[in-house]
Image (tube, rainbow, N blue to C red; front, side, top):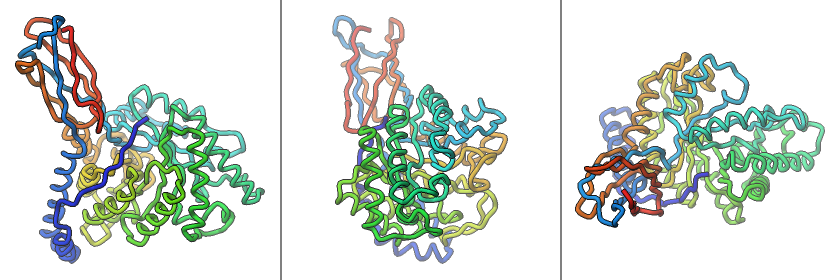
Length: 450
């Protein structure tokens, strides 16, 4: 289970000046567009150096308590505190994976976070008949490979979240059933899955009392809060250690939606609803290239509520559709997919409130939006996979070899996560140790006996 901390962001660039430049970019001045992007990315890189790294001091002494001087020390990062994820629905739904070992290899080479499907209509198509066993088997593979897991979603009034067998029940009875489901899943999977998207798309979907309505009713904020609050309280009671997320879409693209979500969270916060994090879906509108300013504004605004932010659903495409939104022009190709993804990841990784990014589909073989995968249908990497792997596994990992000083110490600044530390004295055998460099945690370690 990951422990997430919230951090308020600091403005380090003259945003007012940037906002004067943005209209020029929208008008199609590519040079200005690139300039603004470069400024935002430079800021993100500076902020990442501050919010994603910590200082470490390692001290080595021999069996007599004397410092081990001039010894070679290899520091190798083995795990990342930040969660880089992707959905792993294929492992549960019984779909035929033509090359399951290759699929798992591609997944584990890039990601440390996997999301599993809990859409109620398919998870429990008949009362009491679930895919729990299949899900647990897939979760076991993740656990064995150091991959953190999340369930998505528990409560959603879309037809995918409402089993047909609820049709004969009253709204009160069906609400009782959905809360029983929350208890069953969150409590039953405790220890195996401890992160959940509890309520999905609350400001865009009807509330549970309107479950039989034919369209998406957007209820007043108090009514939405009345529907959301019990779900979170039920989930928290079922597993007090679980990280519970409220997930919403369109909050990057439309200010009105962002503010409506902000007001809902403010109301839930006033009520003491046990929310642990906020989920930001980043795929609506589906062909938009979000400007850096839109991304940063959203993260600043929602991050100001004090909760960790999760980018829960991200899936730029490569299927040749026109790029929309007015920031960039052209079509969505494999190259533009890769460029936008790299830019977006850097912006999010450089914001202190963000704790995870989740891609919505590994390959083009089984994908929600055509061309949205990181891999081709044969699981060979697309340019976007290669770029993200370079970021996650090279640029955003700390690996170095240094010598101990006269005090037997080495110091380094590294990305938060787990490390293998191997010391090789001038005379003697190598010895390996493990440390965990965490934000606000231990920063100095002493090893003796070598």
